[in-house]
Image 1: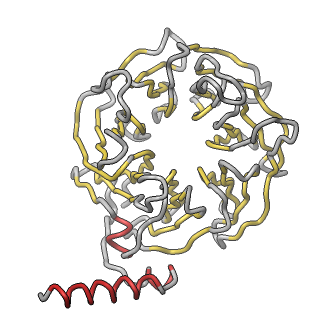
Image 2: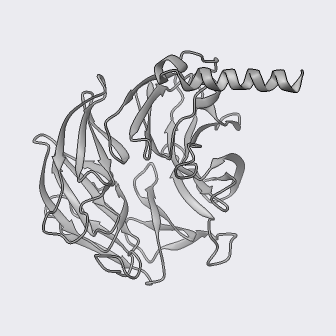
Length: 366
């Protein structure tokens, strides 16, 4: 093809796409269907402001990976910073942090269905029931209440602490125990909020070590909270990182694991049986919820201690207890997923997108 003609064609395509609305552009789609396969959706954050987030799907039965699944089907970029995703019935909800929206797609063929907009800096979505979900936010000083069926914002839970000298509360992960939803407040904070999900109201709070970044519930319906401790100079002060176990009614701390001030643990996960915790602290650690001893190293990081990048995300398959470790490498090139058996034996290595972060596991359907 003549180079000049090629430039004209490319210019025309770019001009055509730039003047179209999202919904119109997403109608120009290709087809792909993963059928009833069992696998895992992987959000690749991309780089902040680069609009290069992506979605991968890994077929665990056939050990096949589908990268850029959303773009390849819809012909449209996913957006800026894919923070997390959640599977609900036949739909996958992908939270786009810096784009301020949640993209909703068909979980089988990745086609765009609808979106939730009007969000500030969304982090995670948590389904209370079929008509109500909570969306946490880094900067909004509120948890947004949305109707996932209509995609409408129906209200807010105010979490702003006006007495604070810094911006509280930047809400992060959520865990339900009964009618209570526990919400970690991560960035420059040291609080876990307790929400009454019937009244959509903060009813209590728990002070923890600085920057609680992840939480899970165990088989005894106890809450586990992992705090990275922050770093020197942050407004609420640096603490020693901690992993604590909380009784969800009395809010009493039942157990505490304290780490070195130089540590920065993240990505608390739990297996399907609810009896074994996993988290990243440069290496991969494991701890029995029955508290038989200190956390043990399961997998050592291949990188030196102060390497920029490395182990970044973690997921535990609730069906098989297989371990998935996301390696961001250097935060710029496509990352890698390491799949291990429940006994930490290598199973597969998967090349995905830039900065793979979160996993959403899919059970095979008949």
